[in-house]
Length: 390
Image 1 (tube, one colour):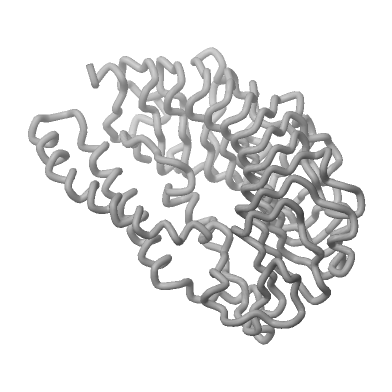
Image 2 (image 1 turned 45 degrees about the vertical axis):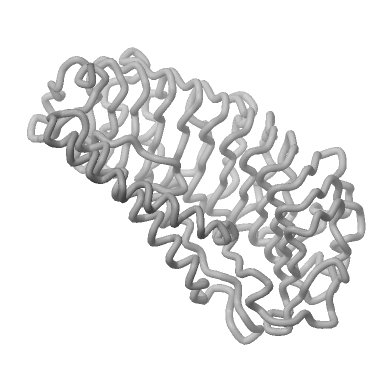
């Protein structure tokens, strides 16, 4: 096990989390299966490489601070590299659609005849309709045969009934990120009729509660950066194929998500960071491997909570209000955990962990001793804490 001294960056750039989001690009022709990865544009490959390199460089800089003056000089020596990489990344901003497993329509050729006039449906990829970045204020009517619908980065405020009538049982991907949609403007007979949807991206809007399709094929649900204040139980009861839920940057409380995640028995990843939780989500399925709950108001861990999650490998509870009294003895001593982030809390001692743990983050707590619990006496590590930075 290693106690790390570097501060984890944004989840999207950390090695563990980013790897989980390297999903396949859509097919470029009907003969190519959506499950087969397609090589992304060269600029995006370069951008991804530079982002990974920047994370690596950031790791080096922070792990070498502030122990010695010599290491401080090495940090300064790396500054030009840091600046250079940032400039290069800024110049590659066109790769913003990489998060959507998305290729720009300009790379896919001319539009075909079976398409709404507001959008493009490339002949080389006739099952996709690209309506992004067009200042649309409404969702256009989707013609039959469309399986992948891109509507991100518009000014959409409402979804009118009937727009999905031609694709209720065929639409697989729906991307609505970065719009102005509210629950009051989502009419009946729209999302509630999509029975084949596999991915729903609804981030950066103004919804206060989830809009969940009836599809039993739903695999990925993203509703980040909204105004979600409730997530009623039962919405995910029949979502047997759902593996990933992203709800960070909302206004969810522990009471608002009670039993919300009981349904999906194959759920692997749950991100509820940047909310108003007082405790870790209750009733999550035992299949869960990744749980992120950073930036909440969590002040205690339930006794035996992790024992109910035998597959959990990555747990992040940084930037909360955890104190020693809120962590029962042995709460984190489970063999499945590989990464545990408890940084930026109020801990005064190092909690007991299992020797199978590979990454432990404890910086910015109130720990004034590097004494480990007896069960971890074989652990050899250096702990970076506030007290060492004075």
